[in-house]
Picture: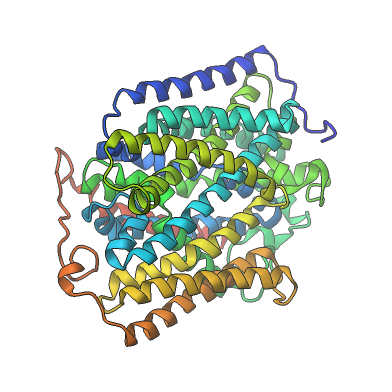
Length: 551
């Protein structure tokens, strides 16, 4: 970096940043007192209220992908970036809460891969556990790299110092306080992130003359009129996103979105930590409401940056799209507010990385080490393994940060990972959860073949054999091809192998019973306004209504 992004922080800004670090570590030490069993360490003893798990659910996604990546997409693609929220997140979150959480929570599984072991077999379970572990350390690397890059650019901290500071803090509070520490810190980080992003949005809008002024300036920018519409130009791929509406709906809105939100254990783990079935189902539904509004503090700043920062969109240097938020912080914020914004960025990276690491240490300990290496040890032993896995996950995440460094827009890298790891997993889940005839062998071969097809599609695109217009178009179609591959493999393999008896599938397959939707009801759970169907229906209606002004 040449110093073009450097911020002039004063003592007040550094004081706010220090107070945040102290508070985060304090939460970790406080949470340690509640850890007596491995379930306490990995799943918070299944004791947390829905509002806590709901905010943690959405905060766990507010990492580098959301803040830096979505602002970059707002600058590069304009209003079309809202697809990642209103069709690419909310419908899947509603589906998770209403349809899938009863199977996860009701079956008492401790992780998403464990559900696959019960529904199919051990090979399917191990394949998913290993692929999930790899995916989490790769995504953790994205958050670490983005954190280091921003701190280097804004504060002048060397990359290695930024990486060590961020990794050390996350390592400390997760290894000490487990998932409870991660979740309560994610609730804190949710509000800190908003406190950092709202001033950027408000001051930026004032500078460009409000929404009307922003839209007028976007029309006269390289984005043009197409940058102000979500669907109007998707009859072909001639639009800022470079994607046809079919790819957006099927690839992003269905396969990628459902694959991420319904089977990604880093998210589902928050709902599994809820105190009962009702709270677990409401967790993603509560999270859907702030998710609807987050574009205001991610996409809008990206659009403000593209019309106020001359030359934004360069291939290298300070003006790459990933620097949209840092550039606005440099240009718009006074001291004090600047410290809050830097703290918000730190919180976002740490929330995302903490979600990846806490998911990784749980799956490694329960689904790999306890199941296949050291069985039937006492709880203290597995807590120690979980803490060592936390260290290992962060160390590997530091290494994978350098892979993320090769992408000018980290959102494209993340979507490629999702198409390879999440899309085939979702297809395997959805078929197995709704079709009792799907066999154990079909579970393994479907998941494996879908993953191979998604990976091959990506590699062929990189090699120039598949001429997609953009990286994102490849990820949409790669996810779609993986989904179709899983369906075909599931049907063909199930025709030639024997299914499990229905007695072994109760509580795991829809229509066979065995799920108690009431669970341990507490006071207020039966209130009409807490109905999962009502909460989900309103969230879906709002996601459609929000499209109308920007159609």
